[in-house]
Structure formats: C-alpha cells, structure tokens
Amino acid sequence: MATEDHSEAASVMHVRCPDRLPAETYWQVLEQCAELSPLVQALPPTAALVELKGALRYHGIDARRLAEVLRVRTLSRLGADVRIGVGPTIMVAATASGQIDAPGGVLAVDPGQVASWLGPLPVEALHGIGPKQAAVLREYGAHCISLLAAVPPATVQRLLGGKAGRIAADRARGIDPRPIAPRALPASTSVRHTFDDHTLDGATVRAALLELVVQLGQLLRGRSQVVRGLTLVLRFAGGTSWERARRLPEASAHDDDLRTMAYRLIDAAGLQRGRLTALVLKGEDLVDAGQVAEQISLDAAREDRLVAEAVSDRIRRKFGPGAIGPAATFRHAS
Image 1 (cartoon, rainbow, N blue to C red):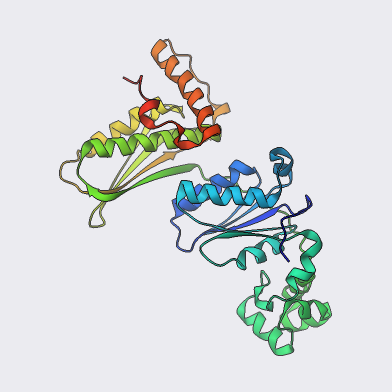
Image 2: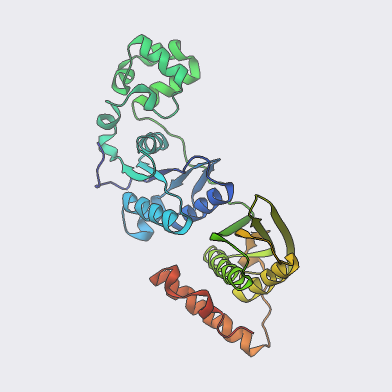
C-alpha cells in the first residue's frame, strides 16, 4: 500500500533513470540528487540511492514531496524523467521504483505498511531476486512475496544457497539493514545544448554557448565548486565531432571567466560551413571552492559584475533558472 503520509523513517529514495541515458546526463541527475541531500550513492549506469533523513528536517517536507521535487527538476532541467521509490530501507525503495511504469513517477511506501504492500507482489519483484532465483521459488510454490516470507529461512537457504537465501528471506520480511554509502561526485560536470535544426549561424552558436556558460556557472556555484579547465565539444551533422580543452588561468566558477575561455575554445574551432547539431561544455578538474584562494580584483567593472552575478543567483534560486536570461547576465561584460 502506497501512501502520502510518512514517518521520518521513510527516508530512502531509489532513483531509476531511463535506459540508455547518456553518461553525462546520468551524472547531472546525481548532481540534482545532491542538491536535496549530500548522502548520494551512485549506482551506475542508471540508478542512485539518496538518504533523506537530515534533508527532511532541513527542507521541512516529507520524502514523497522531495522525490516529486527531484522528478520535476530532472525533467525540466535535463529532459530526463525518472522513477523514484521511497521507503524506510534500500530494499523497499528499490522494489517500489521497480513497480513504476515508464516514463516516470513517484511511489512512496509507509514504514507501517511495508508487509501489506510487499505481500501481493510477485516474488520476482523483490529487489535482488533474479530470474533464476524466482523460477526456483515459484517451483517450490512461493510465487508471491508473502508466501516467500512464510517459508522458514533455513528452507530458503537450501533453495537459493546460504548467503543468497538468507538475504532473500530477510528482504521478504522487510529486513534490509544496509546503509547508504555516499560516493563522491565525479571530478567533472557538463551541460548540453541541442539545436532543433542544423545551424551554420555563428551568432546562434555563440548565444547557445553563452547559455551553457550561465548554466555551468550556476551549477558550480550551487555546489560550492570551481573548475580548473573547460572542454568544448561540437557535434556535427553526419555524426562527426570536434573537441578541445584548455586550462583556466585560475580556478573559477564565475560566468565572466567561463565565458572568456568558452569563447576562446569556440574561436579555435574555426567554424565555417560545419552544420552543428549540439554543443557540450564540460567543467574539468572540479575542486571545492573553499580550497582555492580568490584574488581581489582591482578591476571595478569586474567587481560590479561579480556582485550582479551573486544577485542573479539569488533571483534564479527563488524564481527559477529562467528568471534572468544570459544576455542580462552579461549586459555589462566587455
């Protein structure tokens, strides 16, 4: 039984991304998870676990609502609809996410209803049970999870083997003591723009690149990180691509610095008659902003732009990423 009323014990999210999701988009989904809670465990290539106990107190809403926030963000920002299961343990959350039909949705299970919710599900729906194990259990007569839970654990161990049987017997009873083991996010991140039509127009390309600069800057500053290098990838009609990387003079997450380097990269491409289908801008060698000493600039115009950047970030956080366009961000840029 799924319900919208949860105790704080229902704090685990299992996130399933679409199949064949590009790796760079998968890492961006992880970044969206990290905006809600620092306890994120990547399960490549298309899944993740998020522990929300501290986040529930911080955000002041329940786990189901946070899962809905995550789904809206991944869909609106990345174009990726995700399936999110919420429960008191990894097993319950992962089983719940597996019960959601594509393309996406949220299914939350109340801690007090785990047994009644799991019981009617087919045995193969239990997270961790593979097709061969399910076939053995069905042959024995345990075709649903409630019947598996009624089988003595020693019998399940004889059917499936020692460790596998013990785990299956525990999980059928809702027992899963595994903690979420956070893994560090990758040392790079990327943003992408896909053109609706193949484009030759240099002004259109630069406008798209400027938009990516703003997106990347926001992402980095939101995570309190800076980059030491940028990579620009150009995708062309016919499947060919061009890629170039450069180091920044100083590690930064400021739009001003990212824009300057991104423009140098696009100029180095020497575009003439190439029909572009997409741009990818990657921030490389990410480090914590607190580890980098930022020099005070004697350029008054730059200082004004940095102040405006901070104000723009606050406006976007409050009203959404589209509240201020890239052109407004750089209206004072030289």
